[in-house]
Length: 204
Image (cartoon, rainbow, N blue to C red; front, side):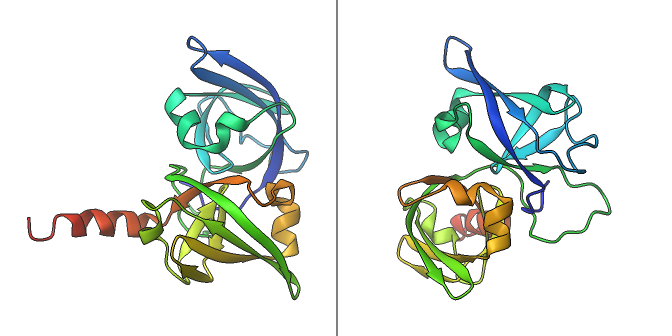
């Protein structure tokens, strides 16, 4: 489990195709801060990489390697990763840690596209568009994770929703590299997911 509070931005240093070219192995250079100098990247650890929960298979002092299946590559933005791509990182939640964002599983539900980015007072208003299958799960003032970042939804209209991103969040994540037309990994609030599942059986 994660909180959606990013603890550093890493960068892809190597990409290798594996499994007949269908799967991939990524090596990620870790940020130089006190969090990532600790034991975040021990073998077998779960790390949220731009919102996707991945398992460390190799690690060094300032890097770690993960393997990604063809299924994950097809359902997330990881298929676009290349050397130099910046990646939001968060280590898994420990018992007793502060839950400052919201509970995030690292199981991405799909992709949303950036529609617009507009300065608004001291922050920036971002508008995203969801695929029709995910739109019903997003509500105004609800929580959503975008590229692993815990955010509050401001408003919803059809397939589109807006969030405000403050300068601190932009500076501490890979949002500064995004633009209109960029794709972001989306994880809907897990309570919405299970409620929808329950309602699907109503009257059965």
